[in-house]
Length: 588
Image (cartoon, rainbow, N blue to C red; front, side):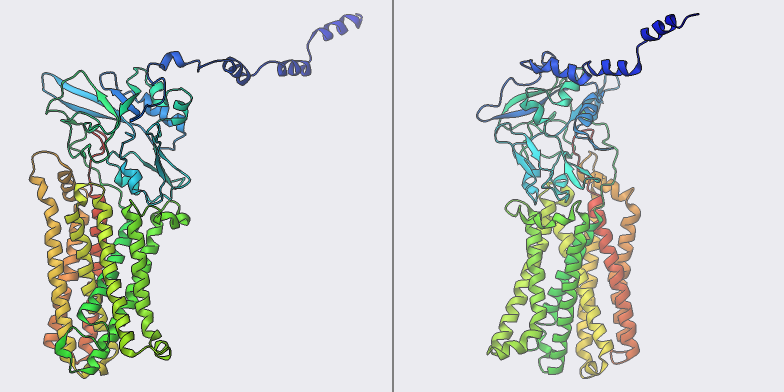
C-alpha cells in the first residue's frame, strides 16, 4: 500500500488550529445583538410595552406614577423577580412586594393580591427625615431617588416611610429603594416590574401633582394605615370590584415583633440618664457652694460645700455617660465613618437636630465640669469670684435647658413618623420619665457614696444627708410607680374589637414580648421601689452615722440603680419591638 492515499486523506481532515481560526471570524452573541440594535430607532421590544409607559416626559405640574390594575394582578410575583434581577438585589432584599386582601362572605369569598413598591410621594417622608440628604425628588419626573454614596445607614428613612419602602442592605451598610428604573424610562424602556408582569397589571402613567388621593389603595382598607395627606402617594390602584367593609389584610391577625435597634435603645437611655442626673444635681443640690435651693441647710457651710462637691461628681458622671451614649449610637450606623454627615439635614430632619442639640449639651456640661478647675485661672485674669460664679451658673442653666431640648428632639424623632405607638404623649412620658427616675436614683447613689467614703464630713450634719436621701428615695419611688402604671396602659387596646395599630402593639406585648414586659416591670418594682424603701428602712432603724448603715445603703442603692437601669433598657427595647404600624394591606 502506497503512502500517497494516506497523505491525501490526512490533508482532507481540518486541523484544530484551522477550526479555531475560522471560529474567531464568526460573530459572537454579543456582536449579533449589537448589530440588531445599532441601527434601531427604538428598543426592539417596544411593541410589547409601549402602551404601558408614557410617550414623553411629564408636563408642568405632572409626574410619573405607578398604576396597578388589581383585577389583572394574580400574585405570581414576576414583578418581584424582575425587579430583583434587574437591580442586583441581595438575598431577602425586595423593592417590590406582593400581599393579599381577603373578605367577602362565605357564599362569595374574596381574595385580592396587591403588588406595591415605592409610591414616589409628592411630599416624601424619607426625603424630609434623612439627616444626610441622601434623597432627592427629580423636579421633572417626580421620581424619588436614593443617593447611595451619601447614605450612612442610619435607617431613619425606614421608620419615616409609612409604606416600608426603603430596605437596609446589611452587606453594603446602606439603605436602598425603588427608583422606578429611571435609567430605563429615560431610554424609553419600561421599568423591570412593568415589563416583567405577564398580565400587564403594572404600568406607568402621568398624574397631576397636588391632588388629594386615597391611601394608594381602596379607601375602606385602613387598618392603621397613614392618611394620604402625610406623604401624598401617587400610585393609583384600579379595580372593577366594589370595595366593602369586609375587606381586610390577609395578615390582620398576625403580629411580628419589629427590629429592636439595640444601639439606639442604649443611646436613648444613657443620654436621658445623663440629663436626669445633671438636672437632679442642680435642682436638689445646687449650682455651687454659694447657691443652695435647700434653704433649710443654709446655716451649714460644710454641708453646702460638700453638696457642691457631690454636684461636681454627678456632673462628671453625666459627661461620661453622655459621651458613652453618643458613641454607642455609632454602632447603629451601617457606615459609621461617615457619621459626621448626620447634621446636614438640620432644616428638616429631627435626627440631625437631636445630634446637634445633644452635642451642644455635652459640650456645655463639660464646660461646667471644667469651670471648677478654671476658677483659679479666672481669678488670675482679674475676674471676680461673684462674676465667675454667675457665669458658671449660666453655663449650668444653659446645659440643663439644652438637655431637656435634646430629649424633646428625641421624642419628635419618633413622633414625626406618624406611628401611633410613638405619639408625642407616649414617647414623652417614656423618655422624660426615664430621665426623672434614673436621675433621682443616680444622684441618691452619689450622695450615699459620698457619705460612705467621707464619713467625717457627714458626721457634722447627718440629718441633712438623711433628709436629702429620703427626698431622693421618695421621688424615685413615686416616679417609678407612675412609669409602671402608665406603661401598663399599653395593653388597653386589647379590648378593642377592630384591628388597629395600637391593638397589634398590645397583642405583641401580651404575646411574644410578654416575658420581656414582665421582666421590665419586675426590675422596675425591685430596683426603683423596693430598694429605695429598703434604704429608708436602714436609716430609720440604724441611723445615718454608722459606717455599716451607709455601706449597706450604698450597696442597696447600687443594686437598685443597676436593676432600674436594666429595666429602662428593656422598656426602650419594647419601645421599638412593639411598634406595629402596617405598611400596606397584606404586607405586615
